[in-house]
Amino acid sequence: MGNGWRWWRALIILLLAGVVFWQRVGSGQVNVYEARALAVMGQRGQESTAILQELAEGRQVGVYHLQAEGDIAPARGTEKIIGVTVSKDRGLLGVFSPGQGQPQMLACLETLPLQEVKVVSLDSGRNAILIRELLDERFGAYFLSSFYALYTWQGQGLQEIWRKVAGNEERWNQKWLARGENWQGVSEQVTTDFTRDGGRLAIKTISSQTLWQAPAVTGPRTTIQSRTVTHTYRWEPDWGAMVMALGRIAGPASLKKRQGGKYVDQAPLKAGETVAVLEDEDLLAWLQPDEPSYWRVKTRNGQVGYVLKSQMELLPGA
Image (cartoon, rainbow, N blue to C red; front, side):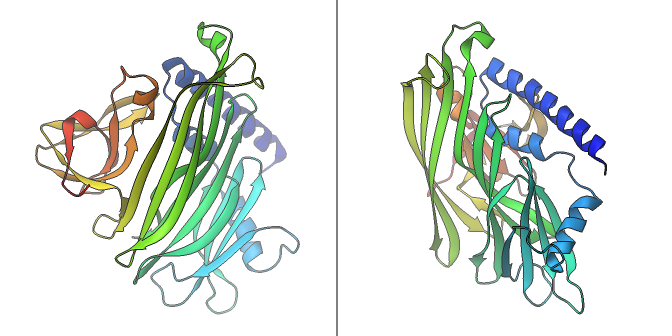
């Protein structure tokens, strides 16, 4: 892959990021996960596997990378997990089986730049890979965010079972929206505690969120509103995910997906259907009270999407 293609790809992603940013601030829909997905799109290629393979074989001496070991794949034995940051916007994660001779690549993921890679136990029979990523889009898009993510082996490869913002700083100028001259932004600082509950992994997060305003981008900030939100996620093997709670669909409803800054219908849900609650998607509703609030859920057939809170009730014990 030549330098010319890299330059064009970077320019395309920057332009797309600008479009998404304008859509998001224009509608007030603050969703840093969309910015993360955009940043890693279209990165897969032979170059990725070659970089990781050389690191696994010890042929990239002097290249800083992160490494962990653990039993991740179904095959007997311990795998080697390698994470490397290759540019400001790009990271790679590979899983290798030592095998006979050269290490064999079992899985490769495109990520954001990596800050941490480790293996954690989900329960007595399964492990997962925990990574921490950094999204730095302060040029043009004004994001500075970090994420935790958990991957475990499901089916033929790694599947994401949990993702959470670990910290987020986002800002915009109100004149871009014809709303004045001040700057506004959202700050989110998250404390994350990894613990055990009945032998299974449990993660408790405490998120301090602030909507602020300032006369200049680096000027003194005035708090408009703030809150602290606490959630606990537990590994549920029956659902193949870290789950906050279980919910029951109250009546005919729709599983939605995010598309162009909006929630659109994805699949019908039946009254009485039980779903696993993965995340509380209420930040937008907190910032703009006239906006509806959603749960992010997983259905029994494995579909992941969003359900209006008004269309679902949490089951006792949630």
